[in-house]
Image (cartoon, rainbow, N blue to C red; front, side):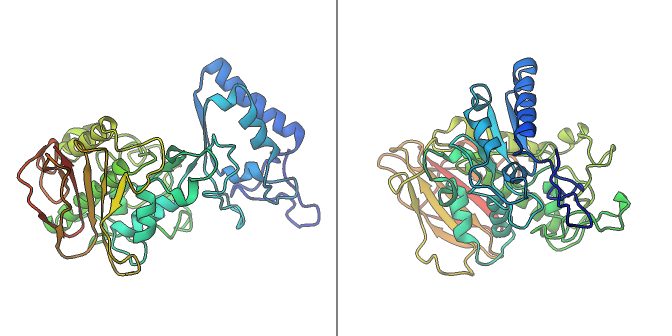
Length: 387
């Protein structure tokens, strides 16, 4: 039932980080796993599974990653399991187990897109050299998933997850604060691609507080305009904090409990999150079922080789009414953007400007009066709709 190396001093192989690894592709073990999954679907009506450290499911008895793992194939071809949601976390604790975009999938498995996470975090905090990957991420990561019959929705887009910083902590801490976990700060990831916006931890500085809210709105904007399947973490919609703890799974307290009173205390931010989420659900150009081609997406970019560029803008086309212009400015200065001409018979209306205070930061019907240029604020994002 477990992978072992009888020649090693510690004989149990450890690709899980928990001291052992289930021998998933042994026929007896694989049957037990498939039978268990079918039981959950047929008896409890579970409609899908997300597999933690799913690259383990792809390893043979010797620990090597298999190109066509019997277990994954059996699940994918099973008449019951092939009809539910199957989502992999396509990595494990082995150096050869990072399978983002390469996880065996039989065109039905979706993946946590870790490259999306890193590109979004990096670009939005102003890192150099990530704009092209950020652009790929916004449009469904076709460089990873446009093979065979895979679709943009097979990319599970996320910026935060149950592991790691919450979204508020991602914009409030440069380093983890894990002393409360009792492991001397050794646990948790040290590479978080976070930015504290100028001060480590809590602050009353109004400029930094404003920037942090702006950055969180930029993150939700990114998730909701991206092609693919957005995933958010409970509590991020009101800005939950764990005071910088990025490995809080063992705490049964305020760190991991949903703080209901915060919904009213953070009404402005929650209103933005709710509004842009509903906008995504209602707009046909967001969350499309197929990858975009040049007729449906225009990049307003003249130099993709500029590694220092932190401004990105593009348009999504749907044939006139409802076309979208979307821009992100991760520079520390304003960018005077020349807007493309809207479709004939329409004009641009502002839906989102994350630099504006609530409720002007999001207007579902759009605000008219947009001219041929827009001065986009530092660390902010913009969305216009043609009406």
